Length: 200
Image (cartoon, rainbow, N blue to C red; front, top):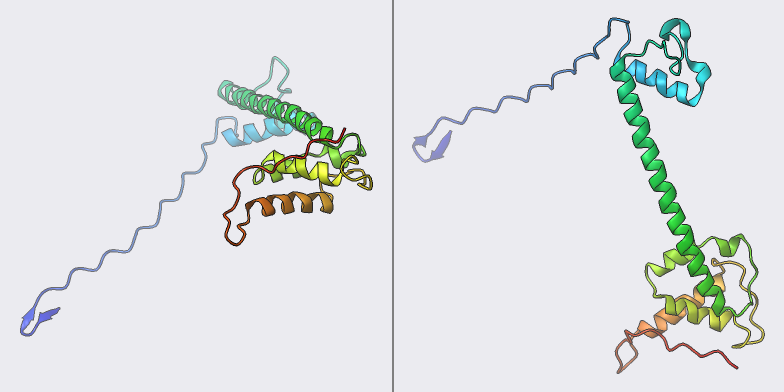
């Protein structure tokens, strides 16, 4: 390889191409002709539908004391079921906490409607409100409810039937944008909107 006039060096050797990864060893077959995964698959299927257990190939049912399931497979399956049950309890507990938080949030928001709402699935589903609260403080939502729902602010306000109501969502967005959009010669107001007190 020429590096300068009249000067040559030996070019570096080309790197060898990467060797292919070795193929994984096939799963070990037990003396009963089954692999670990075959036993675990059979047990998973049995927990879903007991009729899938083939007593001819697999022996007595897993809940029988004379079953032929290897002890280490029994231990692995029980550990899998235990962890699965723990995750299910955690999900149930989280769902219960979320339901309680949603109920409290719904109560707070509907109090601002002063009775002008229609109970139903549209107000039971709090996911739209939770999505709004990721971007907008709750004061803007309360302000929109008082503006567009509470008949004390305007007697012609229709009852609120859903948190997905376009008029309600637009009111929340308008309140937030109005309070946070700079005007000529003024800076945006970082504070929450001034809530109107309910009329006597």
